[in-house]
Image (cartoon, helix red, strand yellow):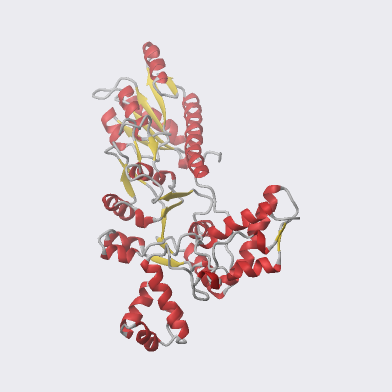
Length: 462
């Protein structure tokens, strides 16, 4: 836990006695802390925000008591520590308040040193609580296992773009097939940018049940729905100061898209069950293997949300389009496996390496990781031979009736098939767009439109 910086310590003081209010405010501001004051419970709730780590509440205030105010704050802002101010005759009430969630009570009158010491202890507790919230969530989202390999010209160009975009604190959209390493790229951008060291929080929109995505993103208060036994911050709140990665954004339910759009525009949201606005400072990186523009045409994705996400776009090529990266990737995976198993090294025979290079990799890097992991478990003398590689039917295997170098169409989306046909035809025609248009039976203008749609315009602009 980092040492306390008084200028980062935000304290709310609520008391209906003006003298006590001004005295406590003076004590804490002389210690360098930032204070917000309120004359009653309603005003305290109105002035409360997530950056306030400690709230000092008078037990007896008109309208809303300190206990009622405390319960509301703890419900909406978990991680905030509460100090209860009480008179000498109210000690039993203050103890009851502590049982209800207060961390400490302060009796009137209070010495300056005593108040500051109690507040500093509460600040440390609050800071630790908030850090633990981040750590718990980050443990649920472990780093991707595969390092980025930049051997081919395509990957070297991608690496240059990653370094440039990392310094630009804008929203980024990552596109590419499943398994190409979009999560790895998102983490690289985060780690290379000004938010490095802050939280990187990932949300997979495809893996969460539709009725829980909003609660995961924006959190909820206690009792907001049947399963909400306690208040919980959302991923957006935990990512404050860092990066929020929205993976498979194309699977976000249509009914939730307006709320995400508002969040992207205002960087504010409301927890489920709360009417309080929460403001955060996060960088948003999203990713999708789907064509979001096509989803907009099909009315399955909001165009205004697409434009808000698509500020800076980065396309990650499929592994079959950058096969020169395979040896470097395989070596990195084997090195990691050997380190995990406590052995010196695991090697790959030349024949095995050639077989990896000739595979079509429909599952991209994720498939490569799984195949090497499996092969390393059954190989002899920690050396992987071709027969150790449990590959699906290769696209260069004549027994399976597929065309040399072409992946099977089974399981691929129409978007992927159309893109593959465009690339292969352009390559066969030496990049001549007019000839490619003639071969595909479309206009040359349509070729240009498709190049832009598939983010291939720069690759075939000559």
